[in-house]
Image (cartoon, rainbow, N blue to C red; front, side, top):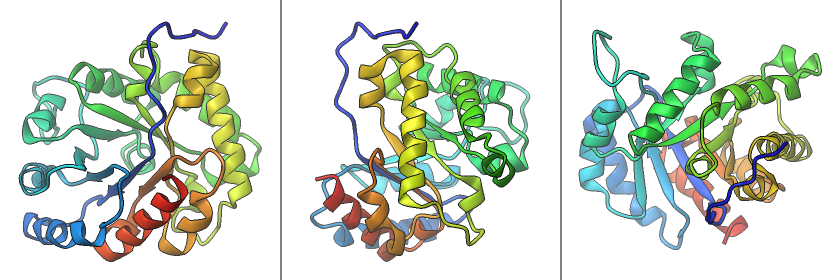
Length: 263
């Protein structure tokens, strides 16, 4: 039985997120954010920058609204003997307002489990950070017709314990791993079908109304050459941009294309 929320739900958001990954020193980050704002003239949709931990505070100090600054990962513990890890409260104090969780690179290279990612989602919500839950299937999953099973597992396990009144604080970012840096392309038709599949899972967990208001971003090698078509794709509420976000002019082009599709 779907769990319908009894609270007043906000409208669906259209958001553009830049994920710098392990790039940019503080000096490079500050140069970037000096160049970016004039390039975004006319763009009204929220621009979120997911920056290295070292850049959160200086970038937050330099940029005002409508920019939102966040982190690329965090630990599920509040503190303790976890050398090299960062807690949610540290991100929040540095000026971060959101955090990417479950990114394909964290799952693939650091072997993060759905259970671990779920604990981080819950900790982020507890700490007033907005979680961006990243999900996606690999090439073998797609070819083996396992996409739905993989995404349903990642969503169900990743959102376990998230209450109906909390769910719209979360965002979902779909990353088809097989289409990232491989030369393979996720067609608009395939993206639309997969985003609809994601909303079906959200509907089964939280109800149709919540599913229709959930922000679902696309994150499969988005670039200025693909953004126009993908922006107009049914069910795409914005992008999680990786490599193409490292250059402010490239990222700004994507922002303007997204603005046209989501006025």
